[in-house]
Structure formats: structure tokens, C-alpha cells
Length: 179
Image (cartoon, rainbow, N blue to C red; front, side):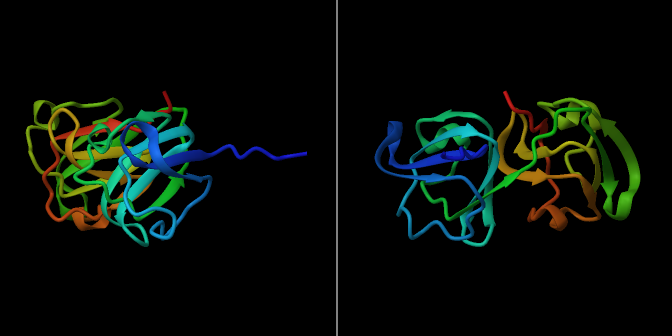
């Protein structure tokens, strides 16, 4: 009897799911031995965060079930993926509190839905700290879910560096949901 993993992602070296491939069903801190470049991906199940560098560092890309025929479809900057990990899918209420200053100071705004333009709701272009109360969220550097991505799971983030950002600019936010 064969056990089927509940998590699966397949990486392809070429666009449109061509070329050498590598199937993964668990966290992988160094993917370089398995492929030299990544131009397309199929996420069969689970929620995944991909990283540009080994050991879960560098640019992040958050993917849920679906097909990504070229790296621009997951908003990749290039064809380099060097590590990946899974994270828990949340199927309940989503809540996050955003603060204009570090250490949960200044104006606060609570959110429970996707915001394609943070400025339209928060009247700030920067988030200096936040508290993820429920669910997992992605911060995008620019409005309309563009630019660098940052995965934020349940917990407190006292400064923007806590979610690995180089600056506090947040243009849009989205809940991570399995579609």
C-alpha cells in the first residue's frame, strides 16, 4: 500500500511545465541539487512559500494550488528558487492589526479582508508593526498585489524587519486562502 502525501509541488526547469522536473512534498532548505533554474510550477496541494536563496532567505513567493507556467505568474523576479517550505492553510476568520509605528504604536487599523490598496483604507503607505491575530497574510510592496511579497503567519511583528522587509512600504495585503 502506498501512502499519498497531502502536500505536493512540482518544479520545472523550463516554461510551460517542460524540461527536468522535481516533485517535493516537504520543506526543502536547499533545492540546488535538484534543479538549476525554475521557470514553471504546479502546486497540486498545500500552501507553499518559495525563497530565492537557500535556507529560507531572499525574495519570497507565496503559492497556493494552481499552475504557474512561467515565473512571472508567481511574480518572480527571475528563475531562481533555492528553498521552499509549507505552511498551514487557514479556513476560518482572518484578522490582522496594522500599526503606523514600531512596537504597536500610533494609528491602528484592523483588517479581515484583502486590500488591493492599503492607502485607500489605512491612509499610510508604511506599516511599521503588525499583529496577525488569525490566518496567514501576504504583504505586497505595491498596490494590486505587485512587487516583493512577505508571508506573515500568526504572531507579533514589532518592526518591519521581523517579516524580513528592508523597508516598511506596504502597497496591498491579501489573505492566504486555498482556492
